[in-house]
Length: 88
Image 1 (cartoon, one colour):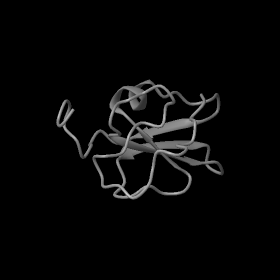
Image 2 (cartoon, helix red, strand yellow; image 1 turned 45 degrees about the vertical axis):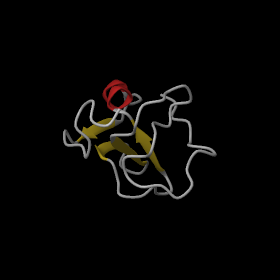
Image 3 (cartoon, helix red, strand yellow; image 1 turned 120 degrees about the vertical axis):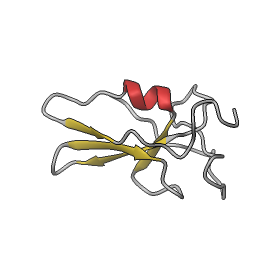
């Protein structure tokens, strides 16, 4: 799994105006992905209120397709701040 950091797209923007970090994706971000290297856990939860260092914003499609490396687990939260197709 490769999650590219968001480069050059974030300035000072509000929730709902952030985009998925995947390089060719143009979808709005619905979820935030975080790593806990010590526990070998990937957490995918609701979009954070502001971009945070070490966190990655993902659209619903990419959040659903994210897989964990062998020996890791994924913890997912089903809730999102955006309903499907809202404001797109």
